[in-house]
Image (cartoon, rainbow, N blue to C red):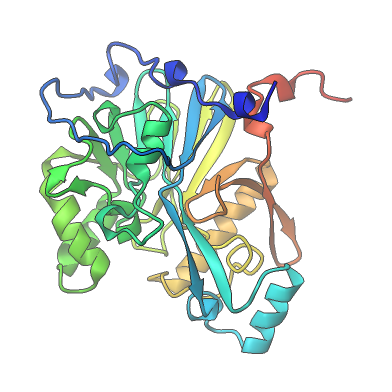
Length: 334
């Protein structure tokens, strides 16, 4: 079998939805909503498929970027000598880095649940490609049943609108009420994320369901408190047939500077002390339970594991673990 065949996405499996949609939650799609056209191109952003029990999970590359002066963002409280040594020890540059934006789609078999929407109209030259990534998986914007916003930073909400028209016109929207209220009260003049919230999120307010930690988006997808990065930043446990995956959003923004050094300050964390506590709690649980996770800013396809090492965590990139279905659970050595 060729590598192309091995990693080829199945359009049929991506669209194999129950006719009733999200009946278990009372959510339903509108039959008359306008469809957002997809720009056709020979170049499509990658969409990588994983199998989680009966669920199919897609990592969708909205885009990537290269930036200089990473210590302006990570490890702001460290000396340059400490930052340089830590980078060198992990075989990465201390003067520039590559970042990624990776929304996630979960096909439960009864509906399509999208987590975050990328940068959208805020696109840097190499981002804003969520719709192309969805098209690679054979999915149109109108197919999406639920859009979950982990938090309201602009690189997660930028794709909600296309020229003032909702991109996912048939969807119900889900977020944490603390998160929504914080940005609504902040006002659009505060910063870019607040402006994008006012332009992209507030017009959809009547279509939002607000859930708290412990609540389910749909059966098998549960909200977990991960406050600190933003006031209501929320991560999600995805479980099907006894198999688990964590969607950690922005709990860690870099595979070394956030994971190996979880206490280092990150410029985008609103409550920096609480964000560090949350990193230790969430990734401590992931390490102890050996759960795979997808982090929004991890190197694409953003899937990995973590091992507790010293005072932090070692990122172990995922390979084929979730592309074997349940085969990796069979014939396990004694």
